[in-house]
Amino acid sequence: MSAGAANIEHGVTIDLDAMNAVTVNEAKNVTSVGAGARWLDVYSKLCPMGLAVPGGRDSNVGVGGLTLGGGLSHFAARFGFVCDNVVNFEVVLASGKIFDVNNTSYQDLFFALKGGSNNFAVVTRFDLKTFSQGDVWGGSIMYNIATKEQQIDAFVQLAAALNHDPYASLIHGYAFLPWQNSWVISNTYVYTKPEPYPEVFGGFMSIGQKLGRPSLRTTNLTDLAVEMDGSNPSGKRQIYVTVTVANDARLLSQVFDIADAILQPIKKVPGVFLAFAYQPISKATMYRSQENGGNALGLDPNDGDLVLIFVNISWNDTADDEAINQQTRRFLEEVEARASSLCMLRRWKYLNYAAQWQDPVGSYGSLNSEKLRSASRRYDPERVFQKQVPGGFKLF
Image (cartoon, rainbow, N blue to C red; front, side, top):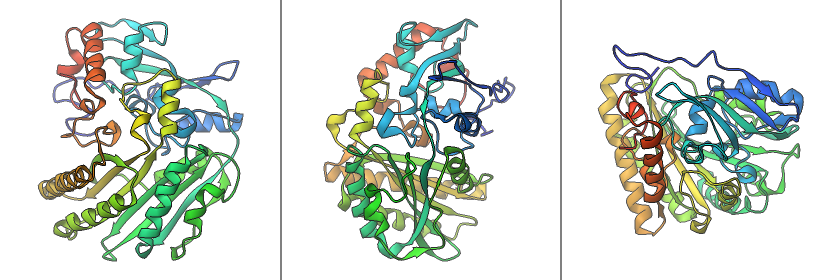
């Protein structure tokens, strides 16, 4: 557990890990998932049944944290955020009362839980919309950094194309390899139909200078989630930071230059590894959120197609914390300044990728932020989850 985030000195840690049951109703349209489950538990149950839910892309990610922070999935352009697909939350309030929270009961809390994180109650079960789903096509390809401009052009085109072909999902990533003193590009492609090399990815598939052996194949969600977990080893110190911008090739190219520049002072830090990625947040995703009743995230399709940028830096020693944090802040400041100068900076910050010193809840907008505070005052009047629970992003 992370010091100061998941536990507290001389306090009580509530471990939900054993509450990991995954059950499907008779109609096979709702899956109930215990709050301690990970997405591997969910997919291992549903894939053999020919079913799926919009869920995490990494098998080891917890269901609870991802969903309460909004939640991105391979199905975003079809069904919205993961939180948009919750039909009921079972929660335990600070008072000890147990509520079923949904679109007809405790509607204000239902809204607040869709993006409001751990600010209101202990969620013990998520009931998720479930749909028929067979095999998918996907995997990863690594490329030489010399293809960067071609890659970015293809990304911008695909981000717009998701409004017409919502079966596609992409993570367009960059990683600095200290042992080679160079960058590589690593893309993860998923098409949620068993159709190899769909046209929507054509702009990428025509790019040469591939490195290693691509892992593209027809498979299932479980297999893809396990593959992604393998690319995210644990055991190091780590920081994430996020920013959202407009879908523009010129800006995305400049973001790479900024990332490359901030790495220079820290590239010799023992065990340092820097990666960042672009993920499209399409208008289609935002429309699906609205159709599902809305959430607390504050996104508006009138803002156009967006790009979620996140940086992940990992390293070995606490002695390097200050230097890493300083450069991470510098990255964010420079990207925001550059995007703002081009009128391409967007307010929203994805909570699940935010650094501790960012304010994702505030980025939801004043109206939604006040709705969250109102729900907190009603369901947690003693502010137990604001004052006595460490970690997370507080409302007051």
